[in-house]
Length: 223
Image (cartoon, rainbow, N blue to C red):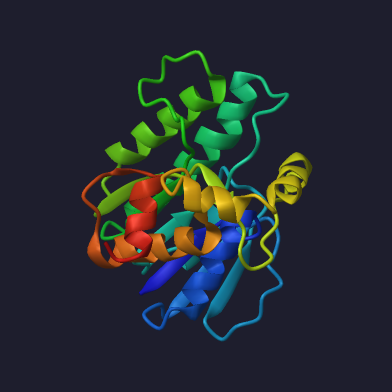
């Protein structure tokens, strides 16, 4: 399996990269982002690329992949809808359209979020934009595309969010997350489970195109 990861320096992306490097079925992992990950591994290739709306300069490096795990994302706090859409929908679809053209047999996995609005008409701005992004991805001619909608996430191996408010939130919640995960298994998962689930849907597929927390956990455990 040859895998592309966008956003490998974020919290989820760090976990997905770790699981891909550990998995014996993954032959090559290539990351794309504005900064290198700092990880050293014989499987790993890194493409540092500043313009995430235009991939013409790096297209020669974007062919021959079985899967793309798209983990790029920003917080909507303090943003207008056009600005958030440019950073969420714009970057994602620019990359996905290029990859669908170069890799028609690819499985594309997008990290969205619990509460995403597939109708694109709800009152919550970020949920509308995420829903618009999911719907556009599902229309592209990939072999398969899956939308991951995680809720609460428990970091397992030192993964850290790049957003300061999220880092503080995870630090405060850290003592309670294992208990919450046991009490509400359908609402909280680990970063390890997200990474393993992504690899699993490439291997075996999934019964749904949109996967909520409980669905993601089931994939992670081979169910």
